Length: 275
Image (tube, rainbow, N blue to C red; front, side):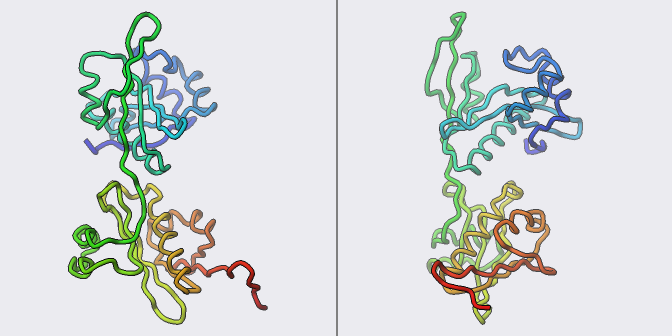
């Protein structure tokens, strides 16, 4: 487990995607590269699991009425399917969704398999041909960025190397954590360097949470706090991960200058800039 790289499928993957589903018996699976290309071009979102040997699995997913639904789960190697299901859950969390669901034929072992991934049966439906399908559902932990609490002390210490005692005394102004349910998975902070300038620390994330856009969310949460507390400018170290998010940061009016990003607060509503 954990050895697979998961990514979104693109048009160039149509042929490989069709080959993956050969012999799967899944009714809606693409039968050839042309059909796979049409699915990808008309909004079907597929995730692919890859290892050094190539594509090892795929799944299709969509958001519907606030629920992440997935189907066409196909795995050619042990644990590739499980990794894809977890990836759907991560995508759902990143979009603020709280539920992930799928339908499956009520076959022996299916509920056990999905049960190991946190899914429980919530409905049974009879479909054409008299077969029974089971609807399986997992309630996802809430992924959020919030102010630091006293109970976060040990997790912050593990992520940053700082002394847990400092945080165990209570909430520290300007410190924020990314939390996956009750688990703290990231830290960012704001410090006063004088003259109305706030310095943001580079976001620190637990393994498995990098590259999901949480860094941007954490930076913006810290910046908003700084501006509410009277800082007119913010600086942020231009780490490799943040440079990969440069376009997203620039969309939020961060500017890269040398080894730092800068952000200058807009005048409050009703104020006029001089000059």
